[in-house]
Structures are given as C-alpha cells and as structure tokens.
Length: 344
Ligand code: ADP
Ligand code: MG
Image 1: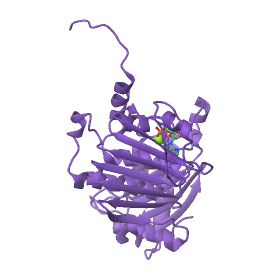
Image 2: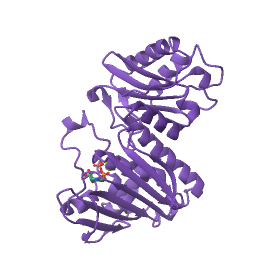
Image 3: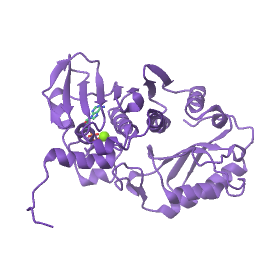
Image 4: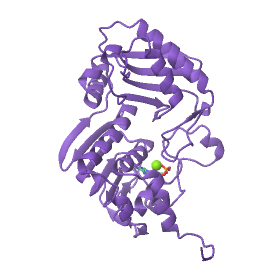
C-alpha cells in the first residue's frame, strides 16, 4: 500500500462513521430521540413516521426544551447536558450521556431541531443537512422539542441499501417504541404512520389504566394471564409481570427486562429468570415477562455498548440468584386465576 500520510478525519466524516454505531435503521432513530424526550422530562411523546420511517421520522415532546443558544451545541459531537464528570457516569440516571445521537443522526439525514423552553416566548429551529448546519431561526412552537428526520441515509447510499421494506422498518419502529412505552407508564405515547394512528397510550396511573396499557402494548393474552409481582432482597427490587407458565410461548419474543428503567439484554439475568420457570414450562416454550429491576446505579455499568443494550453487573451472581429463587417462589405460590394487579 502506498503511503498517503496520516491526516485527521474531517468532523462530518467522523460523525458519519460514528452514526454506524447508533443509527442502524429508523427504529434506532426513534429509540434515541424518544430517550432524549424522556430525559427532558416529557409527559407526552408523539411519534409520527412516513414510509416506515425511511421518508420521515418526527418526534414531538412537551419536555424542558432547548434554549436557542444551545441548539447548535445539541448537534455537536460529545456535547451533552447530562454528564460533567466521571463520578457522575458511575451513577448515571439519564438514558443518554454520550452526546452522540443527535450529531450522528444529523450527519446521515436532513434533520430539523425545533424547540422552546417554558420561559421563552418563541421557539427556534435549526436545520442540518447531512451534517451541514444552518442558522437558528425563530419559529412558532409550543414548549418542548420536535425533531424531524427526513431521508435517513440519503447521503450514505451504502447504508440506505440495508434498509428493509416499509413494513419491516415499521415493525422495528413499533418494537422500539413499545419498549420505551413499557419503561415509562407515567408518560403518554402515540404512534402515527402515514396519517393513521397505530397506537395511543395515555399516561397510566390507576391499576386499571396500567392493565389497559399492558394489553394495548403486549396483547390481552399476556395482560390477562400475568402475575403482578413486587419482590425485594439483596439490595434489589423487582416489580412487573410474570407470564403464567400456561401462557408460555414458543418464541422468546415477549421478554422485557428493564434495569433502572433501561431495557437490557443480559445473559446472566435471562438465565436466572429461565431457571425460575424451569420446573413449570413445557419443553421448547419460553417464559413471557415484563420486569423492572431497580438497584443502586453504582452496582451496574451501563457504558458497555454505544446503544446501551448491554450492561455489566458488578455482582452478576447475586442478580442471577435473586431472580432465579424469588421468581420461582412467586410462581410456586401463584393463584392461577391471575388478573394482573400491576405494580405501582
Ligand atoms: P445525549 O442524550 O447523550 O446527551 P444527544 O446527542 O442525544 O446526547 O443530545 C444532545 C443534547 O441535546 C442533550 O444532552 C440535551 O441537552 C439536548 N436534547 C436532545 N434532545 C432533546 C429533547 N427532546 N429535549 C430537550 N433537550 C434535548
Ligand atoms: Mg440522547
């Protein structure tokens, strides 16, 4: 190979490369943007997409908003309002902290960021086309933030080629939003595709409302045959719903474990749960569950993966055994009638 000399990469190219880690498809854009809305304290998040999200993804929230002088910073790589030092990272409570999502998405789409804080009289918006920033301009906007992402991957044809049919992409958007809607019963969500409302789940407060939401997001078959649990021990708190063994599925597609509000995949934890069910499941069946595990943030490292799908428990064995034993006990004493009385 000929030597061409070492040069630093241009910023925009760095963002496009970084985008590969967090932006895989419309569903991952929805995940990142809705997480930002939740971090901003939104009470309601509206998602509107066109053509499975390939043409347009628009997320509107009623959260804190961004002051006009910070709009540009929001689109700058490694700029975040959520983290100031390493100490904070070790007990991070927000979903984001890397300051990568917005610049990454903006580098591979035509993005408009419009926002208004509660104090401001007017909103402001900033456009960014494939990483090229416009100037902030005033715009009418209610308090909160709207991010519009058009033509995802329009300038990276290699990536665009990997997008699947509208239907498949829509499926992934729905799954991403389902996970987020399950993680926050106190926030309302809606999804509109091509002008059609696919779901709308209001903020759920009462038991009946939470049960309704569970049914809307995961189907009646699960909601009506799930055992509500609230367990505690070893400094861990677990609440949520265990699908009764009789409602086990042939696919492991209804398994949601949230750790400190974040959906995670963890083999150890999943194994513990499966073990708890091992005595009462038919062969080739998988348990269904929606569980929320809460623990001291210092006991879990979330900075393992750019998309933060994985976590590292400082004491994985304790977590595994807690899940295996306590869930087995709960299932053993369950009344098989089990109309879900969801946890608070
Ligand atoms: P991170 O979430 O890791 O901080 P992002 O690139 O996703 O990084 O967002 C950058 C910053 O932009 C955030 O730290 C936040 O201050 C601001 N921001 C993004 N989306 C919103 C939103 N919906 N409401 C308010 N502020 C937002
Ligand atoms: Mg973010």
